[in-house]
Length: 117
Image 1 (tube, helix red, strand yellow):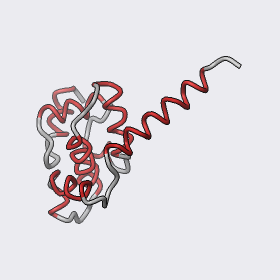
Image 2 (spheres, one colour; image 1 turned 45 degrees about the vertical axis):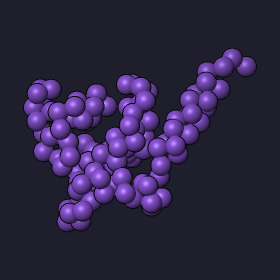
Image 3 (tube, helix red, strand yellow; image 1 turned 90 degrees about the horizontal axis):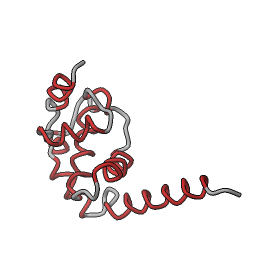
Image 4 (cartoon, helix red, strand yellow; image 1 turned 180 degrees about the vertical axis):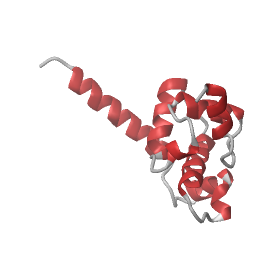
C-alpha cells in the first residue's frame, strides 16, 4: 500500500485528519486494523520521542483512534476525541504526566542497559 493510500485509510477513523494521519504513519501504522490492541500511551511516548513534546489532546486522539479501530459496536461518544479529554481531565484514564513519566522511566532503563559494567 502506498503512503497516500495509507493516509487515506487512516483518515477513515473518526477525528483523524491529515496531520494526525501523518503522525500515525510515522509511527508505522498504515491502516485502522494496525491500531487494534495498541497502547495509546506507548504510542504517545513514541510520538514525543520522534517529534518532540505533544499537546495532551494528541493522547486523547490516539485513545479515540485505537478505540474506534477495535470497537465492533462502539459507544458513539467515545468516537469523539474530546470525550477522551473529559475522561483524562476527570482522572478516569491516565494523564499525559503519567505517559511522560513512563517515557522517562523507559529512557532511564535503556540508558542503564547500555552502560558498560
